[in-house]
Length: 142
Image (cartoon, rainbow, N blue to C red):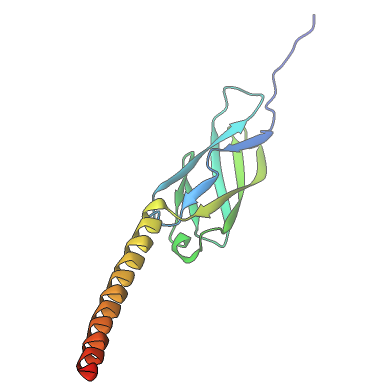
């Protein structure tokens, strides 16, 4: 008689669903979710993350959320996280995952609105200057 006993295998990979995070995201906003690849389909997992710089993201259950330090990053910055997943049996696997900080469309629109406002003021100033200078020239010619 041969008896087979299933043993706990360690996780083999981590999947992170996010490739980008909005630079205007508020603390606590959802960035993405984590899942684990493991031969043991009935395992449950806990996650820890370490980011550089610290406090950019944090983990709650399977969700990666925006931390307090995201506001310090510029659009285009790549944030790398070392994610560790640990299964019910205490076996762990660590993998590095990344996401890019992007400028939100709303912040681009806000910047365009500011630019448009500045241009409108500049145009009004130029028009007033033109009217004044042509009035002065017309008075001098008479």
